[in-house]
Image 1 (spheres, helix red, strand yellow):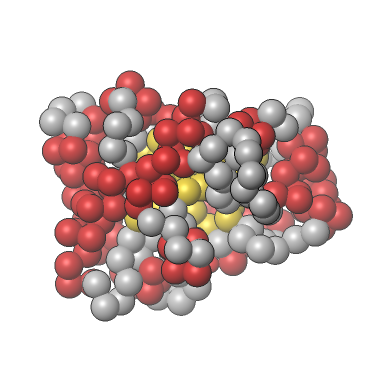
Image 2 (image 1 turned 60 degrees about the horizontal axis):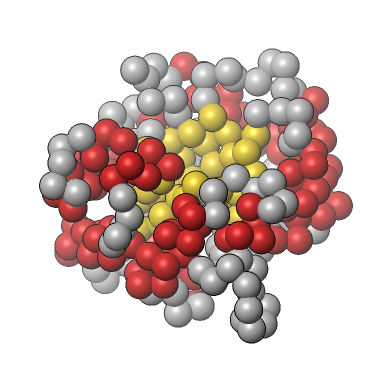
Length: 255
Ligand code: PEP
């Protein structure tokens, strides 16, 4: 699979700052590493300008969350359907920060996955354990996956990425754990086979790693055979560093 590099800007950047980032990236469009797919998950208020600025290029724009109802009395929310209408192509769902601070559960993630797919958005489902759950990580991840994918047809799996993000590695600069993460991503593949009772399910989904990825460790991350790409937080906020990360994926050989 082609490596996929996804920026998660979290709650950073005004529309003006987002526009300037997109313009800087666009300048390098011609020379940009052609061997990977690139996506940026921007705050809701920046999506419009990012979609506009990425029209001629190859960067896909995604959201960081959505509501599962199409419309209605849900003050402050934005639906997957609404996102699809402004040219957003996918959304992150179930990020640990949403689970931790906004009471997101695997059940609500499941509703959001189904509504996003129905609205035409692809999804990145985040799974991962906290430091306290480290010794039971596989059990935690299996439950998160099983619940998030409940009722999701196997035919929709190519539209789904799983991002394995150990919560303790996010924003921590703990780079020595990539080997373990590679093993967990391999397990995630076999869990998908088990959940769908089909070994084929494992190869239909891209698996990303997230947690302190930057231009100096991306190659180590992608050298793990079951990691197909990276979800990048902090290091994606500065255009030069994001361009470096994309460039680092140039040498990565994938079938
Ligand atoms: C994230 O929160 O999705 C993430 C990967 O953050 P960071 O790269 O900053 O660890």
